[in-house]
Length: 355
Image 1 (tube, rainbow, N blue to C red):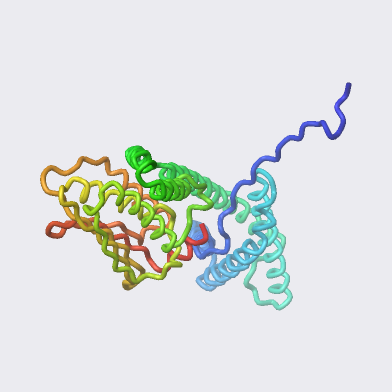
Image 2: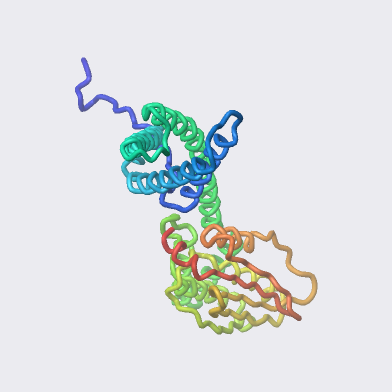
């Protein structure tokens, strides 16, 4: 029995090749440089008869074309990007050739009509040479843009995968210790056991959430840290002391679970190994160019608790991914204190909020 139209298997449309951001200054700069270099090579080539005046006019013409093409590509990028497969790049190439051909024809017609003498005769030869040069150079330039775009997509995919893996990572010992604390509290203090389970649920919801929900605020982060500290206080009791000196707006955009690994490291390596415990200091302040978040813990006496470095590496990679190279995670040892300072640049906060 033949398949009905509704039962016919639809062939999925090939994914669209990503186009570069034609509205950016690097693209305009690339077009200007390629145009100027092409004119320079042609003027310096053996057998060339052009004068310095011809060279300056050609550079001016290619610069004007570069600006015109950048504006046209910026405005039309959205429509071309919706084409399947490599058709977006074919559309860009056709736009380049058509724009240059029409511009060369109009320039030749105006030049010959006004008898200025800046273009060669006949006009058809000028248009032909311009179109051929643009077709060859445009193909090479678009090939470069295509390779760069694929490289950027690959880097973004790898970074997203790393962030997803880091987002889902939580130390098993924390889960086991928390579950043991809940089990011990069920008969002794059911209300505390219930609060511990609720705190654990919030922590795991943030740690295992999807990447689209990975951006919260500094206020959300402090709330998660407080929930974590409340769980650890059940285990460590009076040995765990916390001081806060925070003067940063709570609505500051920040990836979820960014500060909790630092506080966890501070407790595991600074408070837990010491019989008398210790004080963890949480700070936040505005500094020139951004904000700083500080997690300060004591250095335990005796042999330090061995660690894998996952916590700090987690924070460093996520800060670099969300805020760029200007952000930093600095580690200092001052006297008997271990200090981790996270610097988040002001200009990158909006970008982190959009991710």
